[in-house]
Length: 309
Image (cartoon, rainbow, N blue to C red; front, side, top):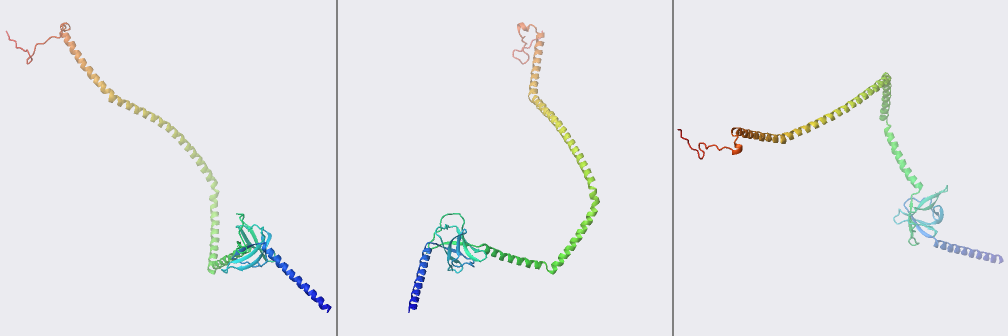
């Protein structure tokens, strides 16, 4: 009877302890969740290795955990519900990446920020803010590796087509032709060796010819300068001739007609003076009595015919 009573007390105490522990855990969990800021990480890439309660780190510092992972309504977008500490600066330019912990392969979410703005991303439990996830390094390497494998396969196919039997025969023939061409070049080099040995003498002759040509060009330059001086003298002579021609034209156009008119006047004056001198010799008394009056001639007024006695 005492054993049963002891067992009942022990069972009652154990049950009460468990109920108290569960209640405390629920209360603590609700208060802890109530203190977290809720966000949705959005991605269309694979999230292999990521589970609920996985870590959420902001620039390497643990700030929260993953609460839920599910698909969006379109069935292609994955929504990852995370809870982070309220003091974590989540801005509009914050982005997420899927990272892995060492050798365990456990995935966690790494948050980072571009630093373009400090405006916080608005969020609430009913309408959580969305943070978009960028492809991780492994995903980028996987995508690049897949493209690389495709390219390598294409290269291998092309090499197989390039190195078929016909192309191998053509390549062998090409190598033979190349060997023959090399031998011909060697023969040509041997045949050109004497001509090459004479090149120094030819070069010296060419240098001497260039020197002589240089001297000739200098002489032509001096001759050109002398001709230029003489041409300048001829230009001056021509200019003087032009001036003399202009002066002669001026004399011919203006001076000579005036001189001709002067000579004509002098000639008439000389004729008149000669007539005056002649009259003075014939009638010296005209200086006192004036010019004598001649009797009127036939046809003139006062003309009378004299009778002969």
